[in-house]
Structures are given as C-alpha cells and as structure tokens.
Image 1 (cartoon, rainbow, N blue to C red):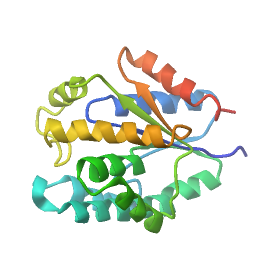
Image 2: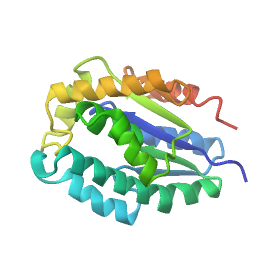
Image 3: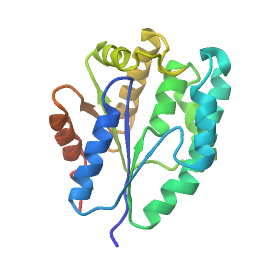
Image 4: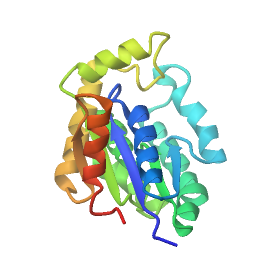
Length: 209
C-alpha cells in the first residue's frame, strides 16, 4: 500500500475548482492511485450539517467570529472522520477547500486576522495541513464574472459578498503562498481546462509515485 497524500484545491469564486477537482481526480486514478474527493465545509456527516448553517440565510446571519468557529468545528470533524482515516489506508484525498479558505475569507477578508484563524485550526484539528495546496487564480475580475454567470439564481451567503471582499480573499491566498511556498502554490487558472489540469499535475510532480 502506497502512502496517502492530502491535496487541497483553493481559490476565489468562479476560478473553476469543481471542474479541475474532477479532472485531477481522473488523472490521478489514471496513474493507478485510489482517490477520495471531498469538500469544505462538509465532507463528513457532522460537517455537512454545519455546512447548511454556514451557507444558507442572510449574509449577517453570523458574526465573523461565530462564522470562523463554525468553519473550524466542521473542519475538525472532517479531518477526524474522513481525511485521516482515508490517508491511513493509502488513499489520495482531494478536498475542494480546506484551511487556507478560512485564512483568506475569515482571516484576511473578514478582518479577524490570519493568525487568529490559524489558532482555531491548531486547537480543532491539531494544525493538520495538506501535503500541497493548489490555489487557482484568474486576472482581476474574471473570476467574479464567471461566478455571476454561473450563479444566475443567486450565490450562497459568502459567494455573494462584495467585489472588494473577494479581492481581499485573493490577496489572502497570495499571502499564504508567500509565507509557505513549499506547501501553497498559485496556479494560473486561465486558458482551457486541459491546460490548467496539466499545470496542477506539474505542481504535484514531486509527490507523485
């Protein structure tokens, strides 16, 4: 049994995470790896229950601190019940969002501070981190335009926040990449889907068997 790896896919709204998560999963399975695709918030029964609390309702439903605590609680359950058991079996786990989303959304854009949100993760999930975090980014404004077209029936309570908020989210992801370049890598999400998938695989080259 080979070693399992934990990869998180990150990025702002409309950068193509869902498309690339499916493509990356298929590419890894094509190399003979067993792959589990999961998501945040969610990924375990308890975390999925918290997901509904987080993404439904008015934007002001939760204070920034309450929102960060809910994300941390969902993540703690996700790590304990889904991610770590899969890794122990040699499975590659691909997650649509993980810690760095909380650092960028609640920490940077939400004004709580990256260090404060990271402290919640240290307590809730014992500072468990992905082997590699790949952040999809597009030129300013392009992701928002894609998201608006995609979410014609209305975005969730976080995705529907202001362009200024989402610009701060992108800045937060760049800060993480600068602080932890071995773990967090920015991936150009422009161009056709196949080209972006190739970039993701290249960024995982040192981890592939």
